[in-house]
Length: 175
Image (cartoon, rainbow, N blue to C red; front, side, top):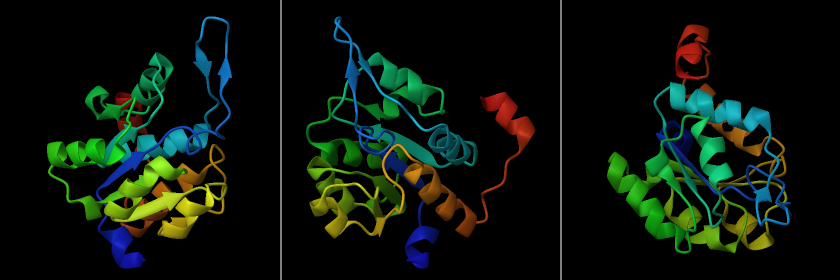
C-alpha cells in the first residue's frame, strides 16, 4: 500500500455519502441541504495548497456543492455534477491535468463509484459504504462518510509523501 500512496498526485471525490453522511434535507423550493465535516474540508485545502489536483465527481447538482468546494480551492472546471457515467468525468479530469489514473486516489461509497474505484490508483471508501464498494476498495476508512474519512486518507498520503505541513502565510493567501 505504501508504494501506491507514494504515487498519488491527485484526489477525486464523490460527495453524498463521502463528504456527508448521505442525509439530504430539502425545502419546499427544492433546495437541497447537506452537512459537511470541516476537517474534511481542511484536508482538501491542504492538498490544494501543496499542488495536488482535486476534483468532485457527483451525481448531485446544486449551486451549494459548487460554492462549498470552491471554498476548498477546487477549480470550477474540476467540479463535475450530474455525473451519470463517472468514469467518463474521471477520464476527462485525468486527461486535462496530464494524470495517469493510477496517480489518483478516488473516494466513493456506492455502486456508481465502482468503475472509477477500479480504474484509479487507490480507491477509498468510508466505513459505511455499500458492501459492493467495500469489497473492491483498496482502503476502507474506519470513519463513516461525513465524519472525517476524506481528511484521514488525504493526511495519510501527504504525511507519507512528506507534504503534511501547514504554511500559515500561504494558507492565508489562498483561503
